[in-house]
Length: 142
Image 1 (cartoon, rainbow, N blue to C red):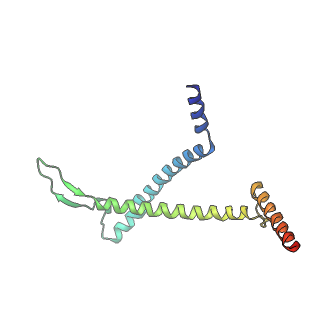
Image 2: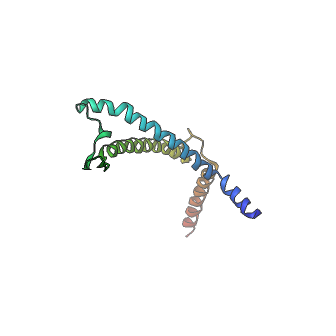
């Protein structure tokens, strides 16, 4: 049982697990912000442009409500709002990943002196140049 708890502790405190948890928390908060932006900022002007049509209330009624039966309807307006949310979130994540990758590419380029290259990349780069020199010497010997 002690080994089980030790394995769980090692799993839970690994950097990747903590990074994942932080990412999920930030993503959840970001989703709420984007949903609020869409429902409170984007949709009201869109409603004005479409003669006060509120998309979240749009639905196809399959069966009208009566005294004894509830209404059955497909709420396509909520789907449209969710798709707008998704589009904004996907675009924002795309821009952020491109921004981060730009810095990552700079840091992984050993010739770039602007950004400090991680030691493992610098070591691999020096090994690569030494292997090229060694290959050239071997070719000249033939």
